[in-house]
Amino acid sequence: MHAFVTVIGKDKVGIIAAICILLAEKNVNILDISQTILHDSFTMVMLVDASVCSVGFDKLSESLSELGKKMELTIRIQREEIFNAMHRI
Amino acid sequence: MINQSEILRTIKMIDQQHLDVRTITMGISLRDCSHSDIKISCDKIYDKICRYAGNLVRTGEQIEAEFGIPIVNKRISVTPIALVAESCDCEDYVPFAIALDRAAKEVGVDFLGGYTALVHKGCTIGDSRLIRSIPQALAETDLVCASVNVGTTRAGINMNAVRTMGEIIKQTAYLTRDKCSLGCAKLVVFCNAVEDNPFMAGAFHGIGEPECEINVGVSGPGVVYEALKAAKGQPLDVVAETIKKTAFHITRVGQLVAQEASLRLGVPFGVVDLSLAPTPAIGDSVADILEEMGLASVGAPGTTAALALLNDAVKKGGVMASSNVGGLSGAFIPVSEDAGMIAAAKAGYLTIEKLEAMTCVCSVGLDMIAIPGDTTAETISAIIADEAAIGMVNNKTTAVRLIPAYGKKIGDMVEFGGLLGSAPIMPVNTCSAAEFVMRGGRIPAPLHSLKN
Image 1 (cartoon, chains in turn red, purple):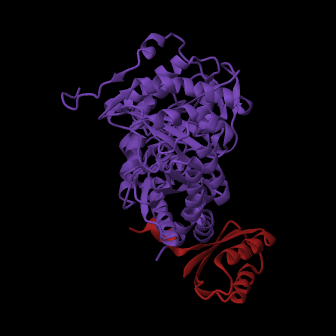
Image 2 (image 1 turned 135 degrees about the horizontal axis):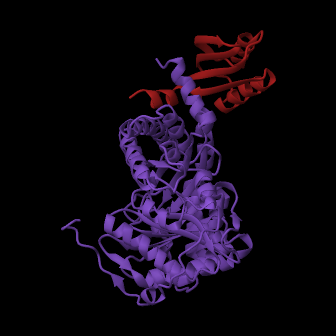
Image 3 (image 1 turned 60 degrees about the vertical axis):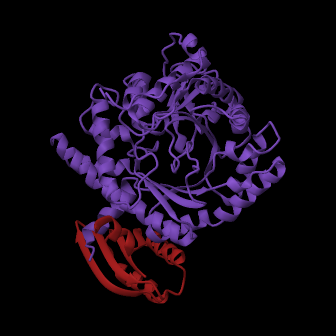
């Protein structure tokens, strides 16, 4: 199952590292990363494969948003289908 | 592949523009729950609802978590209870409402609709009993919603039922007087009621529907409003195009959620209801959209034209985004549930007469309007008759959900809380229509040719 992890907030040291560690711990494979910084605002979109994730999707989502809170960022994970449905015919 | 800006756009819609799926509604047939013994019938109803909808809320929450889209309500609609209850010997149908309420609470849904009678041509004994029991049923339950269909384009308007419903609304207001007459917020009087509507309070599972199905209602006035900001000053055809495109995006999400829910619950997908349903939250208002088109306030001259454009564009955009469209499909204008409507009503720009005109071109009708508690039953019936006539002649669904708030007068506010919001008491034309209403009988179905 493919999903997008999106990270939005103020740039600081170690954002990508922290998220990658969390994803690796849960056995989630990162397929693609794109990242931009505009006026100190950090935006990252990661395409991941969560089909062999070691925890349920809701737990994964919770862990990511908790990490987000700790790092003062908004981190979310959503299945790819919602974006395809909305933007592709 | 999807690009970053598309992803961020979706997130912005959900995060800042209140995009949500307003409801997943499971329609359940209760036609096999009739019995001459009311207790057995109520037990069958309770068991069947718990069996079919046991996983509904959990499934909804899973979909919310995986797709990151809020699903605000999980609801149930059932076969009009008048049909199910009619076989029992009992005269008081309130126990049916209590059984429905208990089942709704057990499975954890937000509302359950279908305490309903369809009496557009006349009442059976069961219909009359159900209608008589509505005030008590709504006073004794929390989650049950009632509706009565009093007219159709093909049958005309049952004015005896219209007369009765004025009294029923007054009684409901009285019996729920300690909660700002909240019972009336759960009671809709329809003309041309639809069988697959997922929205409350008027949802019921029609007799042409399957055993069980999933209907989804989408929302997103905030997204349309934001999109229109980018088209400031443009001609109205550009406005219509912008709304169409936005409605397409919104509806695609509804279609995805409907398909997922249907798959996971093993229940056929019914329809997506293409509706713009506001909430009292700032930035989630249909009134804001109309004002963004250039009206100083909703209710100003031009409001009906702006709403007609909006309603039509929402349907045009949504139709292509979903494989099955149905329900009420259009823009809703519930006064208490829309911050912009509340402000316009308070300022005196929005009147019941203007709202009546607006209902000619949009989904449904006079919705969530609080009126003085001393409004007579005959006046309420006459307002229902006017609204039903609009629906009957124009071949569309219209509805009336008025709250004659007990003990309240013009200028007071009533607070319902949650999605039902709050409403200023709006003035009603007090000129009497009692003699007209007391005549009863039927208004014949209109001619379908010689249209002018």
